[in-house]
Every structure is written in C-alpha cells, then in structure tokens.
Length: 415
Image (cartoon, rainbow, N blue to C red; front, side):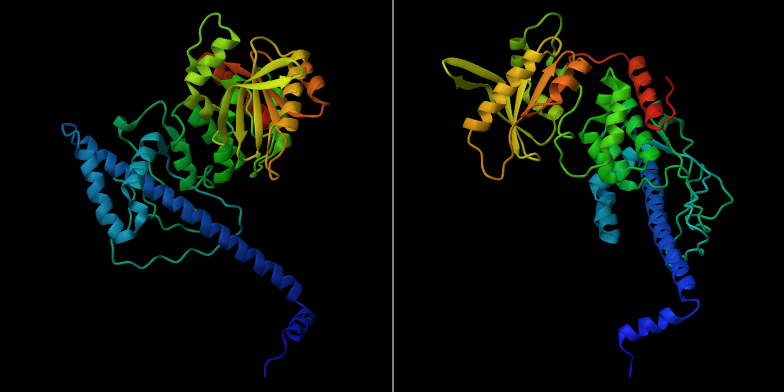
C-alpha cells in the first residue's frame, strides 16, 4: 500500500541530500528544455534559409520563363504539404525564398546558450537522406546534428544573391531569433529600416510579440525623425516591453506624412484636406486601432461654433481621439483649445459605459520640449503633442540618429 503524498514529501525532505540534489536536477531540466527550444529554432532557421536557397538558385537557372517560379512553388507546395504538413504551403515557401534573398547566414558558428553541460541530443532515426550543408559551404563538421551547444549554418557563395540590403545572420549572436522573428522582419522594408529592427531585436532579445509591438509603434520612424534622441531613449527605458494597449503607447512622435505630397507653403486647411484625401495612408501611419469618424466635427458652445479637425475612435484604448492640426510650434493656446474640445466631448458626446474618457492629439510642426512638459504635466484631460514631418531627412541623417539611439539605449552614449 502506498504512503499518502504528504507523508512521502515529508520523508523526502528528511533525506540529507534532497535539498542539494533537487535544485541541481531542476536546473538541469530547465537548461535542457531551453536548449531544446533554442536548438529547434535554429534548426528551422537553417532549414528554411536553405530551402529558400535551393528554390532561388533553380529559378535563376530559368530566367527566360516568367511563370517558372510560380509553377515550381505550386508543385513543391503540393508535394511537400502532402508529405510534411501545412508548413510548406506556397506562401511559406515564398517566405523562405525571400528569407534567403534578404538574409545571409554565416559559418561556422558555435552557439553558447550558457546553460551548463547538456548531453548530446539523440539523432533522429530516419531512412531519408540527412540534410547536408550546401555544396558551396564545404565543412568537415557533421550536418545539422550538433555536439553539446554547437549548431552549424551555411554560407551562400552565390554572387547573384548578394545585395547591400542583405543582412548577415550570425547564429552565435542571433540564436534567440526564431523563424517567426524573421517572417516579421520580412514584412519590413529592406534597407535601413529592416536592419534597425534586426539589430534591436538581436541586441535587446525582443520576443516575437515585442518585435511586432515595436514595429507597430513605428520605433524606427520615431528614432530617425526625433529631434531629441536622448529624451526618446529615456522614454523607451521607462516604458519597457508592455504587451497590452496603453495610453502612452497609442501615439507616435513624430508622424511621417510625406505621402500627403505637401510642398512649399500650405495652410491648416490644406493639411486637413490632404489627410482626408489620403485617409487610408494616414490611418496606416496612425496605427491599426484607429477608426475614422468625422472631419470638422461640430461643437456648439454658448453662441459660438467650434469645429474639431479630425475625430477618431481607438479600439485598444476604447475612447474617442480628438485630433487638432497646427502649423507652427505648440503653444499654450493650443492646449487650452484641446481642453475645451475634450470637455465638450466628455459632457455631450454619447459614449457607452465600457468606454473611457476621450483623449487629444495635437499635431504640430514643432513641439517645444519645456512648453509640452509644463502645459501637459497638469490638467483634467489626457492629451499628447506630436510633431509631423512632410519630408524625410537625408539617409546620412537617418543613419546618424539610429546609431546614436543604439549607443544611448545601450548606456554607452557620451555627452
């Protein structure tokens, strides 16, 4: 007859070596689990990159047939999906090809997971031919199977695939980035923008949700276009990786409105008309949670008529968002006007019980730091002041600001 669980636990606690052996075994189990997950991620990255390499090389050998690539992917997807599952659909195979074209995996790599000694993983028994490194990457090391904490990757030697926008993956430094990270990065424009998110995700060990969140918050644009990089770094360090919708995370600074096509002198009315005419692009810049309600929203206060430039609803914050457009620097009068709008919306505009109070967003061409801090530090309403730009700075200026941001965020900035 078995002893009750409570008695068995008490007996185990009385054993002299129990408190020493248990933590050691628990640590080994956790290390093995972490190692298994990391190894699986790296194996998938290695595998999918090479699948993309093989597909790309074959398509390049048939340059005269425009439809060859599409037909090849369809045929491969049909056979591979039947044999290995939905992970090899046409869209996934297309992503693998783009992964090879956008990234370059270096070799050799010794990945140290700092997890302590871990036994060599068991080899998977299969009658199929083992996956070997590409012929262009000659190596005396064994294929995918690794010894302890080492995993191999491959080098692409094909000059046709080289590009200045191609990013180098070093699995020793990027081992925590899984296939989902790279699929998210493929959704970002190649060049400075993708390189920035890749570097930040690798340096700060962002989760896939953290990476997507920073892209949704337009971190690249805010860093590249902000005139106060140090203040932005302080804000990033204070906010931390938050996964839920917050008031501070719902707005960017600055907003890039180059798609409006505004040049030379223009009025607030011209700006508003251009935004409405390009509403889809403006909503994309604002964020996916913004829903447009109305332009020139009317408000009757005493005998005076007021008109709010733009009114939106934010699904994550569950509230109305009043947007006021300004040409010039932010002033105290702008803050007072927004307070008036928000007070009216809070008192007269119908809202459901589950919704929150309205918030304001003042878009201006210049936000003077002290004015913003002093005027927005106290008040009855939540509002944000953000700059907007109708033209991008030069590539050199963008690169300098991105480098400064990375140094400051790492704590190595001087001056």
